[in-house]
Image (tube, rainbow, N blue to C red; front, side):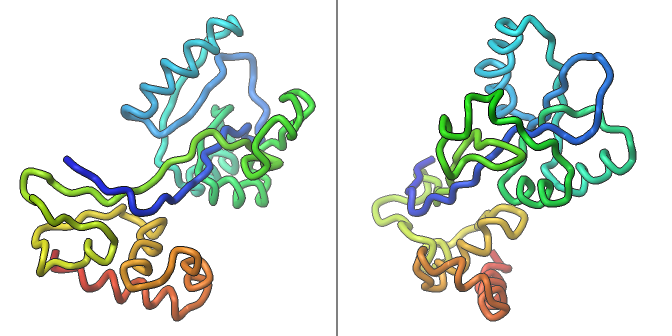
Length: 206
């Protein structure tokens, strides 16, 4: 597999305290499962347990803010620290789903990147989306942009995008000629959203 990094879409993922008191028990941390959480276990969880001399319980989730609402409003919350994406951080903090952090106990906000701090969480990771293709099937001239990704005549074959609007709409607009710096300005209009979906319609057969 070969890939071309044509655009980086950074999303802050943050650790949060949910706003429900919990009895004395193992601290429960929640992430997204799979190989990602396996890596977190080795890099974060195990060293933390050794240093803090406490045990962590782990769970994983789908990342939807509706799941958080249901746990809090249903009174059955057993989660203490949850990894979420930036949109869920902002929305959940506004709704009061999370405990606000006491930054004096975390070294102060000035110890963190300015864009990584929020009243309810702190940025933990930045990741990107890239255009990738099968190097065994595509030789020589290869797709280098999202416009190329849409070019099914020159590079026939199935396409795959994230199942959801996040990043998918941005990619569609860039494929349609919108400059990266103008993507969110365009998406802020009904016409821009319609334009993105219209562009995605072009790939339905692929």
